[in-house]
Image (cartoon, rainbow, N blue to C red; front, side):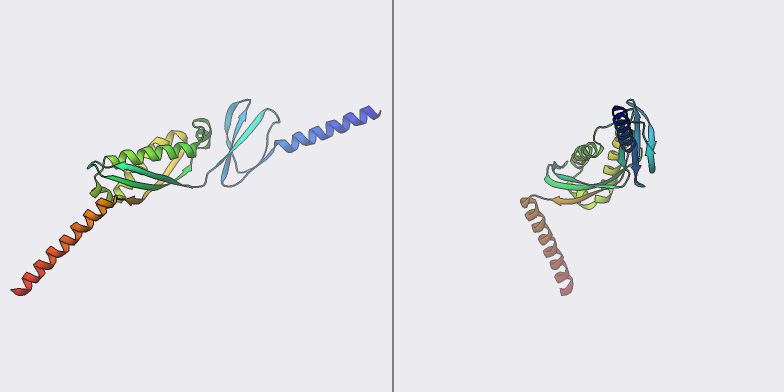
Length: 195
């Protein structure tokens, strides 16, 4: 009799453990991608879900916007000027199933794609274009990165080139050019004043 009671107690504890292990809560900003025996059955959420113990697994995916800083890249522009550039990429997961199935780490993959795209696009631009038309370059970067991440279920909403660091020699040359331009204008104004 005591063996039977012990066995029932064990079954009760085991059942309670399996029940607690099968309860999953998915927050409003998440989706749970459900796998049944290794096969994806879809995304669910938000809310409370019961999974079949030992048969179903859930992987949560955050749908909020991720702000990712692209590390400083050394880029050679089309006119052979070496600049150091960094950027910020804003993206979010729009298809949680693709974000889980088609790429191992969507944030890392997006980061790598952003780095290579930044080098490629800025390498095709001249320094003057980079400094004067940054918004157009940002839009081109956003479009290219978004096209690359679309199969992964990721939408890139914005890319911003933050800092463009010129070599010291280039900064001195630009300062000398600006000073020469100011002197030229001053001479013209002085000459017009004498007339």
